[in-house]
Length: 220
Image 1 (spheres, rainbow, N blue to C red):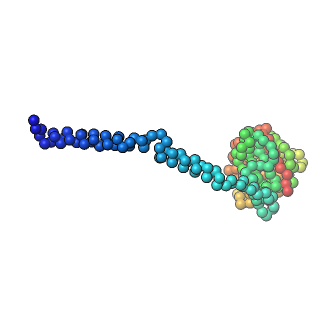
Image 2: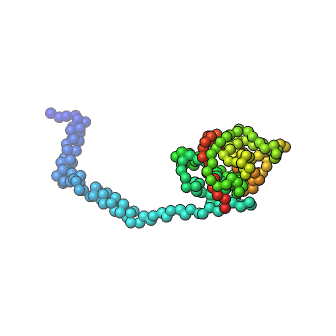
Image 3: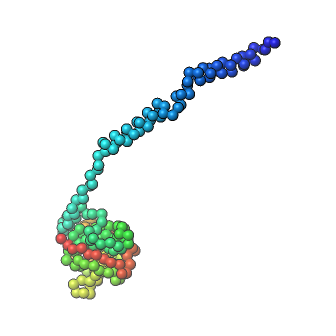
């Protein structure tokens, strides 16, 4: 019996493929997939060599040198002010460094909440620990004819009566500022209070509570 040409070709193709597969098996093609073959061995060896070379050539990074802080003067601001205060204490507190004319606000986990430059004076208040005892959103000094905002009181002047605290830069009754924002960081205050930018004074005022600790560090 003769099959039509298309049907005959259909049978011949499977037979040819079958013969090719038989030839591959006879010549051992599957041996290339056996365990320990060249590709797997080469990859493993290369990885180990690379890791070893990295360990041998790695150069340790030296720690960054911390520059020593330089105190402020009446005409120059402090330099190399550290990120954290140098009071050596821990816990929730406000640290006022008279030498660097800088204030840090520290939370209970001893993390820095705020840090900002201020205007103060070297001789008052004296170095030591104080406690916030009162706060006023708006206050002033009629003798100097000024007003200021966000007063946070923690000490007294030499007379034992005049309050000393943190507050915004005073404004004279005629609208002039007692000194410029660009002068923050200088020990040029005439009173004993600690003056700061309005935004910083508000941030400290909102964060602080009656009874919070204030640490004042010595002047140069």
